[in-house]
Amino acid sequence: MNAPLIIIGSGFAAYQLVKTLRRKGSDMPIQLFTADNGDEYNKPDLSHVFTKQQGADDLVSMTGKMFAARHQIELYANTRVDEINAQARCIKVNGTSYPYARLVIATGAKTFVPKLSGNAVSEVLTLNSLQEYRSAQQRIADSQHILIMGGGLIGTELAMDLAASGKKIRILDPGAHLMTALMPDFVATALEKQLRSDGVQIECLDYVTAIDRNENNLVVTSHKGMRCEADCVISAAGLVPNTGLAKQAGIEVNRGIVVDQQLKTSIEDIYAIGDCAEIEGKVMSFLQPILLSANTLASTLLSDNAALNIPAMMVKVKTPSYPIQLGGHYDPESSWQVDISEHGVIAKAYDHRQRMTGFVVTQNNLNQAFPLFRELQTVSG
Ligand SMILES: Cc1cc2nc3c(=O)[nH]c(=O)nc-3n(C[C@H](O)[C@H](O)[C@H](O)COP(=O)(O)OP(=O)(O)OC[C@H]3O[C@@H](n4cnc5c(N)ncnc54)[C@H](O)[C@@H]3O)c2cc1C
Image (cartoon, rainbow, N blue to C red; front, side):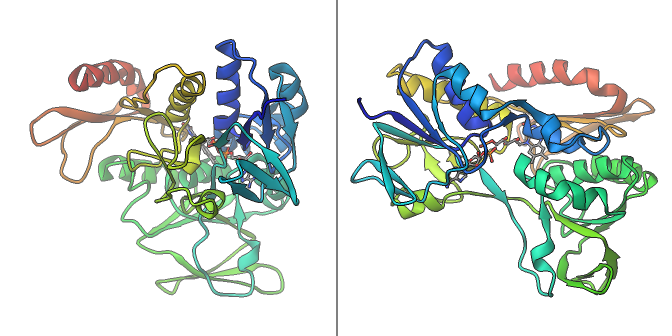
């Protein structure tokens, strides 16, 4: 048999690539190695499992075995790849070599857990995968007081979901307001007001420095000297791309695994896609760029000419008691045209040439998101 295409990972990026290759009619042999059990699930659903009272198994849309049979791939589940040997064109698993014709790295990212002191640091929970949720779900269900480190998109969505399911939540974030990377302060302030009225305590400009265990509880200490008790602590302090295998193989790595517009890494016949990849200097941990990347990479692997082009993106913030939709981009230099009414906010961001670059809409104005998105595409197109 000719050496197959080997894919490392079974997240959205890996499975989207497999689906796209098969949809395009390719019957190339594919071996897929994954550290988890290979079950297919929609990761964004982790943002509302608590209000929906869903366990990890409820999120599985297809078992790994079924996915493998349907898409004619050879699945190596619960199999962590230890090494890539680019000279010998093989990967290594538990001392066994598997040769590849081409190799795709789709290893995702892990949650950043800040350096902390204290005797209970190992108890910090993370929720960046179905497995992590599976191992944390009982502990979270048994907890009443939960502290979340990080008020970015994921931390904020989790806070609202957990609060709506009856938990007492406290978020600590070093930024001046929630979601500093995504949201202007005037929207964040309104969202924070809603979260506070849902019972969430929000401490900005502060962060956790130590976690200790006393007889019954965790005792959390912050940089500003705040001390509070919690039944569990969840880190949502950002993502770090899983680049270890690539680094060790000598592939160029910056924040993520550096790829070009064909998703090629710096080493011939090795590609990277998803949360582990860096495209044009950016790691984009969202489904839409991964979907577009999977299309381009499938074309690259089938020797069609394609180059990745990532247009303006829309992000729906899953905070149901204060729904928000964002589009395009903005930065501290942007000027804003803001309309605030009882229906919510409509805000448009402009660059120094007065060109619209992004927008934010909230609550009853969500129906304005698509018209604004089209306007944005016209301006940038
Ligand atoms: C709570 C939450 C909510 C989100 N909401 C949204 C949203 O609303 N909209 C949106 O666009 N995006 C959202 N995202 C982001 C989106 O889900 C991710 O960008 C996407 O799922 C990443 O897919 P991936 O395949 O790159 O990585 P992953 O899903 O992390 O998959 C990585 C795979 O690699 C495997 N792996 C890693 N190392 C090895 C190894 N050495 N050997 C073998 N296998 C290995 C893992 O087991 C896993 O199967 C959300 C994320 C979270 C956590």
